[in-house]
Image 1: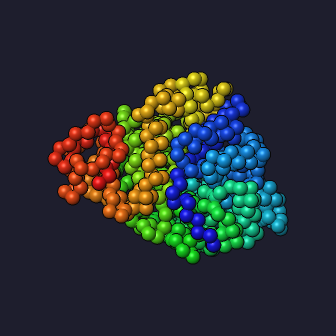
Image 2 (image 1 turned 30 degrees about the horizontal axis):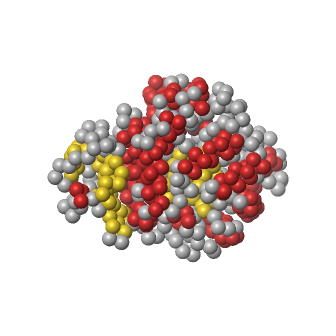
Image 3 (image 1 turned 120 degrees about the vertical axis):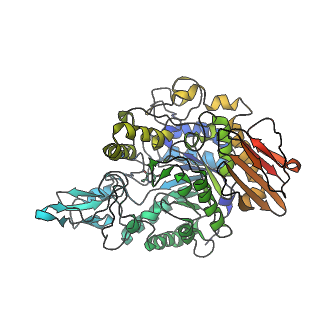
Length: 559
Ligand code: NOJ
């Protein structure tokens, strides 16, 4: 197989197409909008675009429920327009990655329609259809006690067949039966289709859920969300499926793969990403560093715990060092905005810059989510009727029952992933310059202050900070390949780490607080002799071999 290495030096920009830019004036982001913005994307010093799903979909989960794997949603354009975007992106040296969503399809996919038409349909076994169980007094019960991540029980009854189908996410997202070789043949066909069209790789949605334990056993203690995960997450079969996709398709192309992997530890990730003959994915998207202010689900809120975040980053940095490659991110379409979570809305520029350097200077491939580069923050929609996302509604339902509506709404305002799905704020004109008409989803009212145009004009903006940071990373073997070592892991106010490579050292000091704290560098690192590469303040004084850190202060020294 070809061992592609370019992914190690690239940075990726993620587009969630509905909210990126509306080019045809219908209020929905699309590929015409992407075409308009390709030069902007290139100007960020990224090397690739990952598109969240662009395929036809009834939008039960905004594109993550696919009704046709080989086409483009008419809201976004068509295949011909996609080819143009691909060509124009390639002309600019930008690679393009698609989202491969094959743990489940839409219930409106022809495969599912066929599969539910009759038990002897050749498509029936494309999905997990099972008879119900008999409960007390003959009551009909689902085949097992698993619960979905999005909509209550994980089984939906079909009276026509008198059988249930499995859905680990929404009811309209039936799980594909990957143990069926015909389903795997379909996946290989989809991979070939897009690779032959010229795309450069895939982000593989919840790929670690594609193997289910034989017999689909009950799971205890029973949880209201994702019950049964030990029987559907990171099963050994997943590796075999990925190996088959690699051997039979991907190895024939110069392409990149990153797997999405909720509940995956660094040790488990190594099964898939360890370099050499057994590698089946280039990278894994970890979740643990995104759980420093919550517990298991984003809705169970806890005060931000810096040490927990540091432990998570360091664990992946240390364990994958010299063995695999990290995917680095702090935002995507599934999490609330990072400044509103780990930073401070009172200090958006300071905390935004600090957070950017904090993760981009680690070892791995940085992913930047649309709007992150200008510091978009949570919108905090006040009423449940204003939310559109199936997961937000499910969380609200569950937590209203447990804690009451008021508390559930407060939690949603802080943690809903829809906070990250508001239209990108391009300028201060109507609809934030996203669309000439009323957008499909609420625009954050802070767009008049926080927008791309304003930050283009300001050399000290967060946007321009991202540009310099990404340009420096690209040209620095120290950042790309240097060793990582965390300093002061027990400190509650600073995240400090060192990168070292061929006698050169970089010291990254990140202050996580709105109130001042003293920082002291180790004696063998003389700050005053170092070169200050990045900072989020204009002046820099010292206090011994350290300094009194101002709110959210960042200093990056080359020593
Ligand atoms: C992970 C995706 O990122 C998320 O947006 C989606 O809802 C689930 N997988 C289900 O496809």
